[in-house]
Image (cartoon, rainbow, N blue to C red; front, side, top):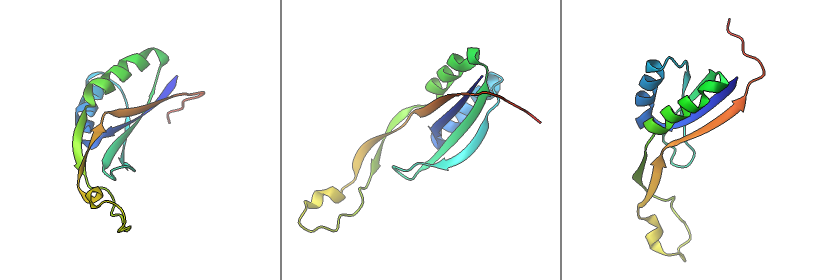
Length: 109
């Protein structure tokens, strides 16, 4: 048995939830916040049998897309540095981060 912890961008969360429902995959959905852009994420905790891990990873990969987004870097108080560092920069966001962990026991009450 495995525990998958999948962190996806909120924009992809509903699509992924629908995929889980269609494929009879039970997942716990948590609202989380990313540290880099401080934007909304959704974290799924999924307990499943070893033989379904590849299937779920494919669903996550298909539903989670990377995209470009502009962000404004933090304000730099050092007047000596170049002032161009305060302009928005384009960064890649989205996709998914997935952890696959072994589960020794699973109980449902």
